[in-house]
Image (cartoon, rainbow over all chains, first blue to last red; front, side, top):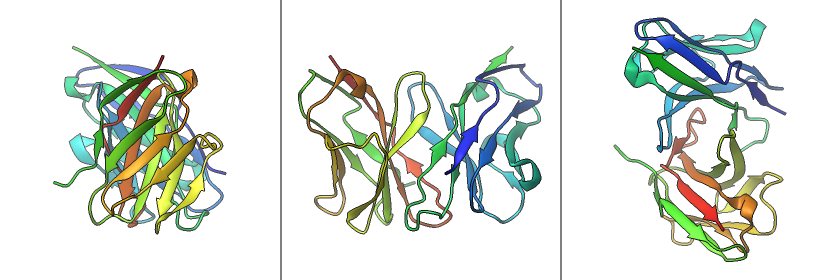
Length: 116
Length: 113
């Protein structure tokens, strides 16, 4: 069974500071990993994905994440936070263990607050 | 850019009533999903649908739930007799099947009174 742990339900940073949102996963087979962002009263938007190509993945809005198999981690970073980054961020894992399924298992989410 | 749409955006219903939540996935996608998010909790998988049949369902998806793709474009989630604990945001998602990337709709907020 696959699972995702997001350390820190709430992260607060100053505008211009580094953003680091942590995600650890477990999966019995090589995983596909995703970060989604949810702005208030909106749906889930894909930030970036890891699909067994490059371990450092670049996404939209200046975000990137690094897949570290030895640490079973997929932490999300952004060098300089912007006020518009304030949102909830979800890490998700998917694998092919179920055949034609690819369901996503989500972490509990991390609410990012950006202070002026 | 193509997107997943969902209607209605907000549905209020009485306990015991039937509700149908509607989704229009992206047109060339092959895999379809429903997820829900109870307020303050994580997004949970409900069901996946491929090749006109359910491919997997979670323990949440009991006999009160059903899904249908009636006309090749719409994808519906029916709850036959709603309970208070069904109150949640319901997200539809679709995927072309490449790299498992799923595209989510904006959600339907279901409130059961």
